Image (cartoon, rainbow, N blue to C red; front, side):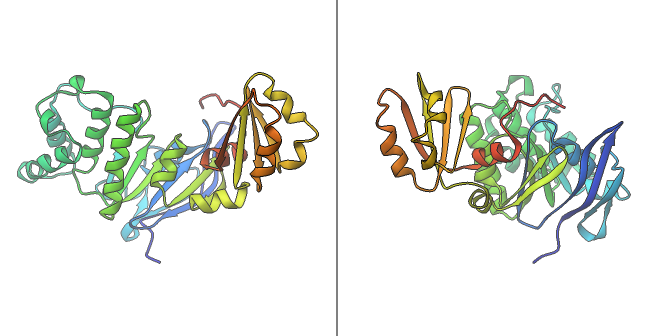
Length: 309
């Protein structure tokens, strides 16, 4: 196994009496996409901020490539990172091309060097025709692609993306996913925080599941699903569906039954007997599907709504 680009050991961060990140350890290898998922307040963004040197840990160690340590070697590390934050940080007064030019100067790159990179990066972001447009003229998806292109101006060793597709419509999200998959195929490494489970399953080689600042699971997406869940899920909804959760004839046909809103979820290793039994309620709608990352997320972290933290 190659030497990790990033290795985090026993990281702790407190704000007053609240421990936001609690004894967290993980690593990222070259060419790997590590996804960090968890409910609001789980510690995802705080962890990313510490890895970027924007917040100082109370204890623990953050080691990067070539023996560099955060925050001691912050400038040397940041020169080799690409960052896309949750919030739009594009300069509204500059065109797309000028945003790339000015950002490249922050890394000490010569203008001639940056200008050679601008056209390929705009093409990568499907923004060639928008080179002279300002961010205010762009759609949300275009702005996110410009932010991603800008993050590549310094040829980073590691990309850190904090919920990069939040607020995008499905078409824009899929185009963003395509661009991120292209980067992974080129050998880039990515640390990705996301609330979209389909995004995590599409892009991530491994997942880190956080809750209340702790790591509660880690592994490849399909392995985690197989470890924690029954393989089949039957969703039932419609008038009278909730009563089925207490039906004595149906309960033995599922390993686990959960209710969320107006839907009953039956988790089972053998779906056919359950589907046959449900034919006795033809007025109800059923959906039979394989277990997925959203099921995993909800099982490990619960179905309760979390307030932003």
